[in-house]
Length: 331
Image (cartoon, rainbow, N blue to C red; front, side, top):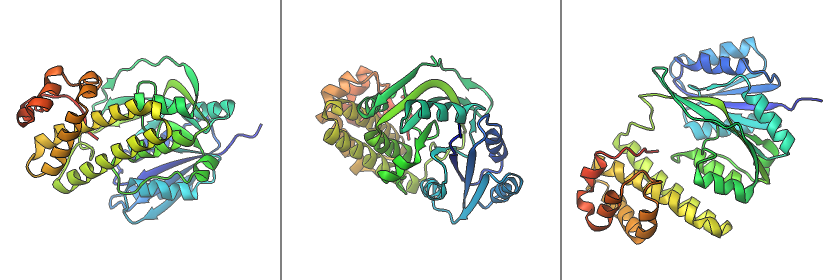
């Protein structure tokens, strides 16, 4: 039986320190019928040269050099060039496990699904791992069930790099990354699960994600922070509207996601400058107060105590002192 071609798309930007390990993890795959599309997004270090060197040694590796336009644009460029039956994604500072492509390709073929998903293992730069238990269980879901699992976020994560997508499916529904938006993975997958016929999920580690101290998702300058606020508001509103329109019975889960993200926004605003971002601050407080019953009911999911939720409702002016100790995360 002929093995299907798998296109692996990797945006590359200022990654000279990590790039070789990442590319080598693809070269080490037990599944050999793949193409790796490296999209050099205007790197000013030696990343582009490293990509070209690998491409000269292995004709399965393709390189595109473009002006810096961001990760979403680079991924879209790779998708436009992909020749494979299936498309996967890899970040330039992470790694695949040796069986990643084999597992995902086998599962998506066996289930005749549009999407195959796996789990990831996270580690810090110092090599310390965050240990999670993986059952190895395999589940096949229709689009309603997949959307529900996606919103619950217990069985399946929001990231594109733990998944493989049927290319004809992505092309049919014009599913692409929204350029200039925060957390484009979430928006991409919400569209994918909306239209997918079947999704197969195997709870086995297939991706090694490295948490880096200098991550741009954790360090904000004013312009970045404003973009984060705008993008997050756009995302949560889009998801809520989409779910209400297509899966009204899942509206409570979409609202729970929105409450979670608004808690994140609030925690960052009060640590930055509440007055400077007063419009966003007021919008968050207004929404949370309006939905106070669900906020109180979902407080454990959001990682916030009853006291913290109560302060938002009755005394938001002192919420800074609470969020100073809050361990919630951001985009």
